[in-house]
Length: 376
Image 1: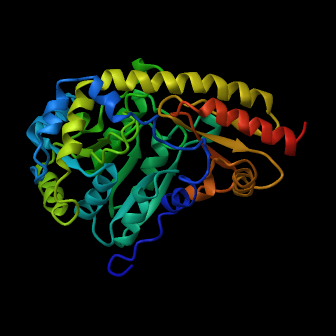
Image 2: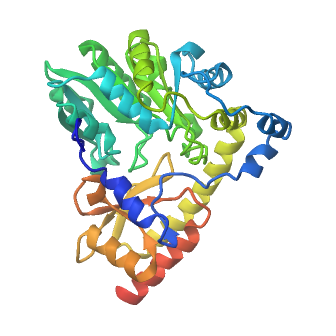
């Protein structure tokens, strides 16, 4: 690739290879997809509006009604501080290109979605990893963050709730992070696509954009809404200079979202509590099945129970690394797990995804594979 010379997106290449050919997926980060009829049943009168919709351009920043619907999920964000994007991935790419320049330093919570650091590297930035303590449930240490900050540090990249561990930091840690970034004048980028899937809703954290004037919160419909086929995401920030830069940058990307996508997104946001509860019930039921499975195989697997999101990170203690284990598994049984090597996080873990209804069938498939190939 000329120009930016960005590295290959290992996760997306991995899924391109397997996602539509492997019959059993137990590693996806999205929730059970919602059918068009199912979505329209939440608001039957919307069918007429969809049929009459003109398929022309819409506002570059998003339709006013949808921007307001997104803003309503925040406490301090106004509609004019919401930028609709073609999925949350566009928001990540846009933020980095508008907020960072060559020579900047970025701290990234790892493991993470590769674009959280790969885009910065392609721009000529230096990147440092801030990793949670696995033995302590993937907890983050604010003192370790302080030690990573340099004079050239410009931004901190977070995923809250965390992908791939399912960790949800306590409010005290979030408050400490905001205090640190504010003291150093850093950008705080908070990827919040898994928000609203907390096992205990009382532990839900406020969006970073509500807490800090130089924060950017991003969200989207792919994960907690179960609407990955609607390529709608957003960025929310109270920094108007950054907002305007990201809006201008969008002119070179998607320009504007699709009119049908934004109309359907408006229905989803209006009925978000129904969609979130549906997906949380699926995850919670699958979590019981997974924990029963892990309890049957303590020699091979261990993990810290996910607190939020559909995903968790399992440690594998088998005779080979997790990459080889996952490769053999998909080849022999058609069951796909995500080895941590794809996330550039060693070779001792794999990610599980519990957002889809067929997870119990997938777990049974994994159990069968172990009984045939790794008898106790």
